[in-house]
Image 1 (cartoon, rainbow, N blue to C red):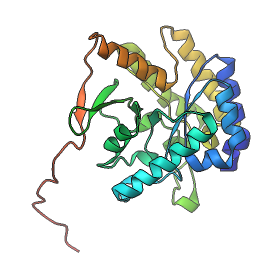
Image 2 (tube, helix red, strand yellow):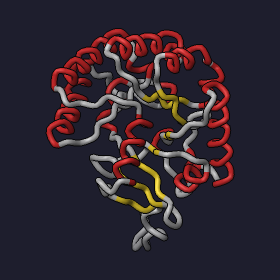
Image 3 (cartoon, rainbow, N blue to C red):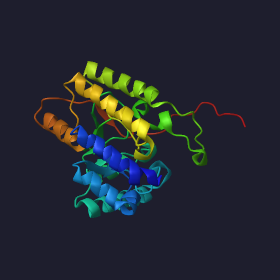
Length: 257
C-alpha cells in the first residue's frame, strides 16, 4: 500500500488544491511515523489530520486498557508531527467498542465519525452528561466496496468501474443536497488515488460545485459549527446513548452445531 503515501496522496492533495477544498485525512499513527513527508504535504495544504488508530486496529477486540494504549499511541504520533493533539476520530473498520466513547471524551476529542445512526450530525452521550459530536457516514460513500480486491486479505470482490462508483456516490450526495443532509466521502488514497478513479473524483467535485449551496470543510470545522449552534440554542441535534443497551438481550435459541 506504499502507493497511497508516495503517489496517491500528492495526487489527491493536488486535486483538492485545484478546487480550493480542505478536508480531513484520518491517518493511522504508524503511517504518520512511516511517511512523515506525505503527512506534511497534507498539512501544508491546510487539511486536518485526525485519529484512525495506530495500526488500524479493530479496537472492539481489545480490552479497555489496550484500547486506551492504542488511542494514546496514535495521539502521540499526530501531536509529534502536527504540534497539536487530534480532535477527531474514526474507528478503524467501524469497530466501535463499548469503551470507545468514554475514552474519546476522557482524552479531549471533540467529534467522532465512525457511526451511521442518522443522516445528519448528532450527539453521542456517554457516562453522565458528557457528549460528543458524531459526524456520520455510510458504506455507500466508501470506496472500499467499490474497488478493493485484495486476495491476501480474503477480499475478492469484483472491481467496479469509476463510473459505477461515482453513480453510487453522486446519488447519495444528491439526496443529501436535496433534503439538507450531511454527506462525507470515505476514500482511501491507495484505492481512490489511481488515475482513472481520481479523474472520476474530479468530475464528481465539479458536479457538487455546480449544484451550489454546498459547504466543503474539514470535519473539525463542521464540529465547531455544530458546537456553536448547540451552545447558542439554535439547534437541538438528536442524541444517542452509548452503549445503547445496558446488557445483551436474552437469546431464546442457539444454532445447532
